[in-house]
Every structure is written in structure tokens, then in C-alpha cells.
Image (cartoon, protein in one colour):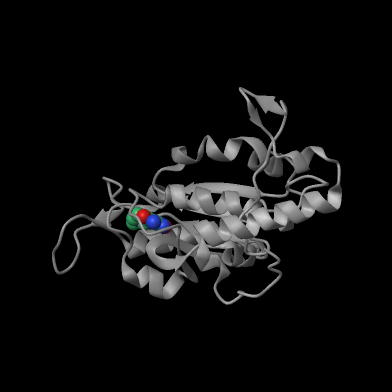
Length: 234
Ligand code: 4HQ
């Protein structure tokens, strides 16, 4: 899939997307990622991208005309229309379902806002989906865009390698993961649960399932709402 990012800080994207699984997905041509600088579409001598809010108030607002030109430029880089996503605390909260929906798109265009955000006319006329990564305020949409790119990349077929699958991890069935252990089997007197060393695969599976249910019940009961009597031997 192709992802285009519109940002005032292209340099922020060096690092997190250049390591591990995302790096590999890009090298393998599974993720075609392009970062574009919004400021290149300013037209005045000072390359202005923002202005004071009509009606007054603190901070600055990103201009609709600059964003319109930036989006038009990016759209023309590839034949697919692209789903335009604006990262904002006012959007729908990102979750596993939304990540899968976005991963099924051939092309995403992510818009990162700074300051107090973008002129609402840009949202009205160009944005297909407003998404939030959580109920807190960041200094810009760049980190949310990177979070989204990372989560979506895991769902691109082949990105996790041959054996691994995103279906086998947290949230695929709406439960938290079971605890994991590796060698040494004993460290400072702290031992690994006996059952995991038993080699009894059915017992191990049952134990893990019970751990997942118990942890979810204790830590994230909201995830169990509406699936109360499902597969609950414990
Ligand atoms: N911001 N989830 C303000 C966020 C945010 C979030 C992005 C800060 C937009 C204008 N985005 N700018 N939380 O806090 O997505």
C-alpha cells in the first residue's frame, strides 16, 4: 500500500519508520511511504502556512488554501485517489477495527496539523476521516501519524514475515495477551510457571487462554462488554 504524509516537519519522520518491521516492509516494497512538506505550497515571501483565528483566541490556524494546494500536489503523485485522514483529538479513537479498515485501503494520505489545527473548511471539503490516537493533546499530528503507520503496516500481508500473523496477537479476538517467558527457567529464585515447561500443548493452551481472560477481566473489563458468556471456563 501507499501512504503519503503532509507535514510541516518532514524531519520528524526520520527514525521511527527506519527501523525493524516498518523498515523491512518499505525495503520489500510492501509499504510505499512518501513524506511531503506543506510549507513548499506557501506562496508569499515568508512562506506563511498559518494565520490568526477569525473570532480571536490563542494560537494560529493552518490555512485552507495552502493545504488545498499541498493536497492537490500529493494527489497527483499517484493514480489512486487516496483516503484523506486528519489526525486530531476530535476524531474517532483509533482501535484495532479502524487499523484493519485503513490497512485495506490502497492509499492513505495523512495530514498532520500543528498549532491549533487546520481551517475547518479543509476538513469539510477534503478530509474523509478524522482520527485520534487518544484523549490527550500533543504538539502536532506527526507522532499520531507515525503510530497509525506502524499499526497499519503490521496488517499489510507479508509485513510480519512468513510465520507471524496479526491475527495471533492482542485484540484479534478482543482479549489481552497472555504473559510470556523465556530462558533461564529460574532466575534469582523466580521460576517460570510449571505448565509451560511440561510440553503438554493442550494444557499450555488452556492455561494461556485462562490468563488472557483473567487479565482482560482485571485490567480491561471494557473489552469484555457484550461478550460475557463466551468461552469462559474459569
Ligand atoms: N494533535 N490524536 C493538535 C493531537 C492528536 C491526538 C494533533 C495535537 C493535531 C493540531 N492527534 N494538532 N491526540 O493531540 O491525534
